[in-house]
Image (tube, rainbow over all chains, first blue to last red; front, side, top):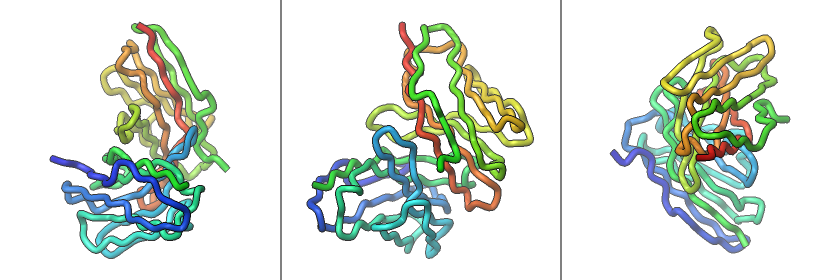
Length: 113
Length: 113
């Protein structure tokens, strides 16, 4: 099983550019999440989804958008990239929510210059 | 405001000894707690969890203790092994929170051979 796959692994963006971080899971999980981790900080929730067609904001949603058209995919869109969005982004999924833990992807390291 | 606090950024222990990682929380609505382990360049992996109806949960070398009155939990690793060297995140969730997790900043554990 591939688990949770994130692409790309690394990316450098210029200020004002846009990009989509891809996240796919093959475990038929309903719950999916996007977190960001800044240096020396914990993971902060950006957006989450409890099923296809349902998304909601987390703690730090500004500057991001998501969609969940299928159970498998949960892309994160960055519009007008800013240096404050330099971070490592993790996608996670779960079948039972927190009760069975999350399965995380390996992350996307994004630098905005 | 940090709802999940891991106040010690790092811990170094000798191989074979006990590692004790601490975590405090402020939100009294939290009723489920998890520990994640993270190696460099990888996503976090679920380690162990505990519900607020229990005060202890054990899984092999890993034991989590919960003190609800003190809003404190700890992860004990016995015996510690060099492969346990990683960043450990404490996380918490509340029933009805759509399984969203709130993470602490993490503790870097180094186990010396």
